[in-house]
Amino acid sequence: MEVAARQSAILSMQTRCRKAHATSARQPFQQRRESEVRGGAPHSNAFRRALAPPTGLSARRRDGRARQSLHHPHSNAQTGPTAMHCRARRSGMGELRGGFPGEFFDESSRLRVAAINHKEPEMKVGSNWRSAHNNDAALPAFLAARVDRYYTERVQESWAGGHIMKGRVADARALHLSSNDYLSIARHPEILDAMCMSIRSEGNGLLMSGVFLHGDDCPQLKLEDRFATFMGAEAGVLCQSGFAANTGLIQSIANAQTPVYVDMMAHMSLWEGIRSAGARAISFFHNDVDHLEQRIQRYGAGVVIVDSVYSTNGSVAPLAAIADVCAEHDCVLVVDESHSLGTHGPHGAGMVSELGLLDRVHFRTASLAKAFAGRAGFISCSRRFQEYFKCEALPAIFSSTLLPHEVMGLAATLDVIERDDWRRTRLAANARYVRARLTELGYNLNGSETQIVALEAGAEPDTIVLRDALEKRGIFGSVFCAPATAQNRSLVRLSINATLSEQELERLVDVCEEIRDEVQMRNWPSTRRNERAGRTRPRAPQPVVNMPMVAVAA
Image (cartoon, rainbow, N blue to C red; front, top):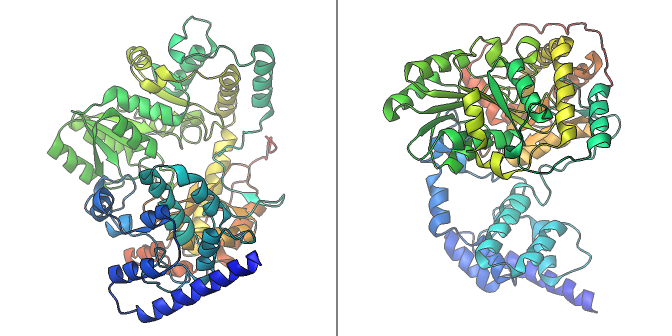
């Protein structure tokens, strides 16, 4: 009887909602909202607060995003500021519903909300949202509203109750292109043996801050010197992660009086370093050297921060031209080589080394969780700065040092990377082939010149469609969306690696060709931008270089 009563209440509520919507189509939005809240479903107070129109600081932030788009880490000059603040409101997610807080809910979504309010045990869809909402009921209103906004605006509206990061579970035949293990060494036996031996002999070692490390025989300090020599630097610092390296470095070289010029697409850790340093972030258009110089001429000498290879779309910074500008205007130049260290340069020493810019770049940083397939970060610097950094950067002082097996694993990894030039050759050939073939198929790869290939669908619902189409055919990439990208610039990133066979490369290309109509690739904003730009078609793809498939299992 109780279940029947609940079902009757749900049907009654739906009837009231339909009648209210039928009579409110011509009402102003705010009037419709007030009318339906008075006569609609029995929402909790926290739910109503979370879905009310934004006011105060929240409203000002939303309204100001267009004006501040240049200072957003992932705004884009080509699409204009509206791409920065317009959340996807897509057709196919239900007709416009005036007044109900989730204006784009379809009837099934409304039924789920009704089941939440009536605690209907049979309703399984949207259970994550329901559980989170119920468990957060004791939180203060300001925090409960913030959490609820995520579940309503993203999970329910943009993702239709699912999750953009959680698609299918890969089976044994899946082609994984989501890993940053570009050189295919994550399971290399030499590296694993070195780590296992360290664990057995030393365990987890001394758990303390790296600031206490000293002595000529300290393995971590010796590895710092090895990395510095490898990169052509005087000295360097091993950090807990690439994020810690970037935030700690910027804290150590910038303050409130320092203008920090940063490429719009620079990694979020660099932006966080600027924020934590209390410095002023002055962004410039992606890879636009003229705009960078204009900003420096206006605000004065400071710190310039770029990535060598941008992780979102694989584009490459014009490092030589940027170094010229920095030298002319007496600026410090920081280059994040997370996606070029190991994959570019002599024996993998990085793009700065490859371009002969060692004496013109003050600091290089890198995450060692990419081509080095480990967990650490590194900063190249002078010997004098090395000591200063370890007593100045907060992540260096207040985080525990690397564990012994991580140090030994990275030392073995450095041996492999320096020795196996064939991995870089094969990686470059594979990436070049994929880029050329996908460009021929009409995909806009946003200027990628590296092993990172991005398929930019745009709005999050369209990216979910792309993800599903790829995964249904056994291709698994990485979904990137805000805050990793600008709003409405979400994408699926394909990370090419060194040991992909010709058959696997053809399989990837065939799938991308097959799904074009299914995902409506020709309607993507990135495709339309490409057409407007009138870019010429590239030369025919070069054949994959025949390299010995040495240690493929590694």
